[in-house]
Length: 287
Image (tube, rainbow, N blue to C red):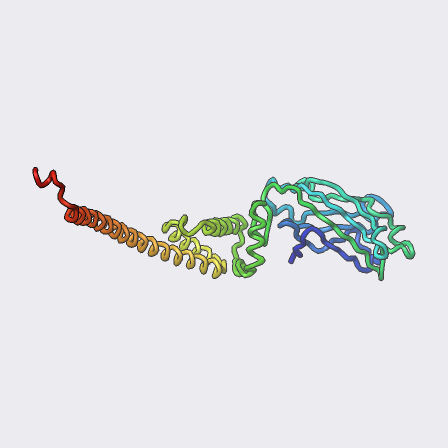
């Protein structure tokens, strides 16, 4: 299981002085949905008496064709007695199918590492840190076995963090089919990011069908089913509210018309009353 980190990963190599392997590897780790590991040549790669360090992309053969990662990263051999004396080198590099490993053959001389009281080895342990900034990702990124567009990584990662059980029972092997189902799930989620008024009844019918397909494939989506039910309920309430509003508006319109008619009648009665109270003039009498 790869360790997810923000931008920094620490690798502690135990018994460094006793290592016999020509090349060793750190555990895999994930930065922004991209897998990495550090490789080290304890006795140097094509050079002598130096520690060589590289940042590498694991399982790059399984990544979609045309993938590329523009990366700025810093490799640090930590001086554990004084970090100010740590050795660090930085580089900017495009990783791709033809260049999946890049680093520094002359990272630090073995003489400095093994120097007495030098600080690089403490209790036989060598500490290495890598700090990674992903500047641009081209192609899809793998997250939990799903190949995603870089723009989808944040949303899917957040979904897995909040609902880690979502794909725990998905046993689809074909990466294209797995990704197709994930795309369907993301489209379904995107539909319900709209206000309930903007979601049509047909959309709800299709959402229930899509949810059923995803559930049959092993996705655990109780949280999404609950959301769909809530939206359906809200739409029903909105529909009932609209009908009641129209009834009230019609009733109010009738009342206003009745009030208008009554006011007109009142004005007529006032005119009659005023006429009845008006004194008869001399001219009216002799007319």
